[in-house]
Length: 209
Ligand SMILES: Nc1ncnc2c1ncn2[C@@H]1O[C@H](COP(=O)(O)OP(=O)(O)O)[C@@H](O)[C@H]1O
Ligand SMILES: [Mg+2]
Image (cartoon, rainbow, N blue to C red; front, side, top):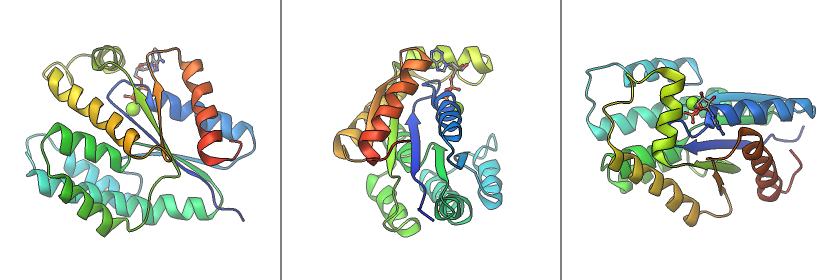
């Protein structure tokens, strides 16, 4: 049995990660591949319990404690869900992974990158996605899309400089790791983004998805 490919989708709110995950899963399944679509935080029973803790309003986590919970949840996700699926030959499409913690907690909220690196190395030694698609879009457009999806309540108080830092952090990750990451212009139509994503995966993985 050949091992499956581990693909992560990254980018800001409303960039189109969930939409692309659905499109990729549909395409891959249509070509006869086993596919697992999953998302973070969560994706395994313990990881979902940690997600509920992380998203509990008013808990106001210390940034290091928050990052530790994120990586605890991520390790659980990897051990219980992602790794077994890859070993069974499935393609795993994961909506957000460790790059989101670097972008949101470090670049966004000021967590030390050394702490991120230490937690990553401790919880996922030598583990990385085979390919990461970074959906890049102006935060204003992303936010407008996300508000159309969920209503304004969740987003109205978030500030623009935060989202610019997050966007720049994703672009910096792509510059640092060009063998793993591909930036896609996510301001375009869904179908164009999906075609580009498939092309990028063929190049990055050297395999026809
Ligand atoms: N390329 C696109 N053009 C226009 N609207 C889009 C595009 N991709 C997604 N959307 C819409 O924008 C909203 C947010 O997309 P979604 O995939 O949920 O983003 P994310 O998961 O990155 O937050 C959804 O209502 C979706 O239908
Ligand atoms: Mg989403």
